[in-house]
Image 1: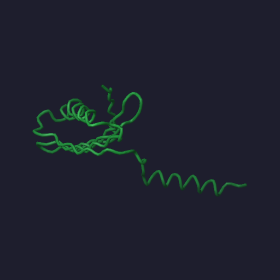
Image 2: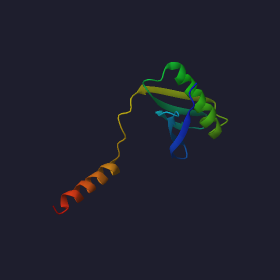
Image 3: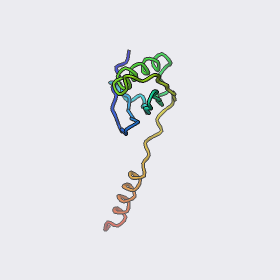
Image 4: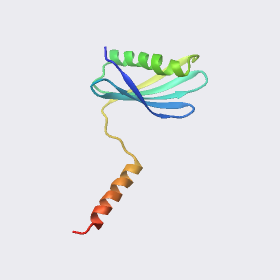
Length: 109
């Protein structure tokens, strides 16, 4: 059985985002949304993760994250996506890259 590590990336009053890692590499992420009676999750895992491991991972997320945040929830509904990471995109990173490129263009030869 894989050993999972969860690293929280963001948190609001009703939601959390977590990266899921094994000792070897990142295998996915889970976004959680808490309502009064139900917790909803979107679980995105690498395409190498099989159905049995997805079930194990859902149980780990429930035990280690969801139940610690909301022990009285009535239901836990998970939508699973399987694929490969295409990258991380952010406007701020694009602007920083543009600034760095502009500074190089302005540098004396």
